[in-house]
Amino acid sequence: MTGNVICIIPARGGSKRFPRKNVALLLGKPLIAYTIESAKKSGIFARIVVSTEDKEIAEISKKYGAEVLERSAELASDTARVPEVCLDVINQYEEKGEKYNTVCILLPTSPLRKPEHLVEALKKFKDSGADYLMSTTDYRYSPFRALKENEKGFLEPFFDKKYMTRDQLNPKVVVHNGCIILMKTEKFKEDRDYYGEKVAGYHMPFEYSIDINEPVDLKIAEVILKSEEK
Image 1 (cartoon, rainbow, N blue to C red):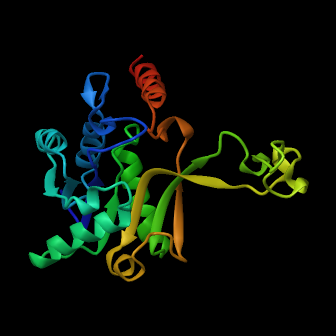
Image 2 (image 1 turned 120 degrees about the vertical axis):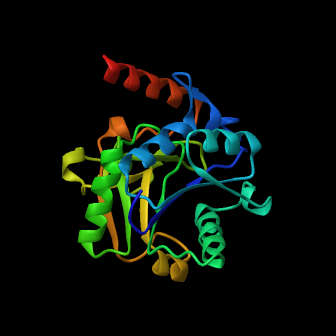
């Protein structure tokens, strides 16, 4: 592994919608293993660190070649945010005298990102002059066609009615797919978040952007992986 980039994989044990999702099996392999393996194969990270409070996640992470930092109970709560977890990891390493100029966050719920996505994203980040980079994908349905239920129980447009037209007439927008976040360390420590003013985008096709939040997402990922094998 090379460079001055630290990879942080935040993986707590608790999950309400999909219990134990970070260790759920995807074609016989724990979900988090896919992220660790892609990070290792990319060859761009000086360290690959899993932050967790969960013993099973820690054991699996070590088995697949990641380092593990124990997370406090406070940072493993439902209200703890990913930026707070990453700042904790950065602080722990800086206390040991280790500083990294770039931080990469990889969520373990994105198992279909490839090593080449990580390499390309880092190159674009360095070339862009941005403080942050987020991977993006297209919306499956236009967000401008969103509906909400009013006080009478009827549906109405969430946005102005002028947007309830053909999708190609609306502004082109993308969504962060959760696969990759890159940050300049010092800027991140200052902002304490990754939604800064200078954010570059790295666009990814939908088939690599699956975010595992429910059991059905796992089934979709299985179909995509099996189709790749064929």
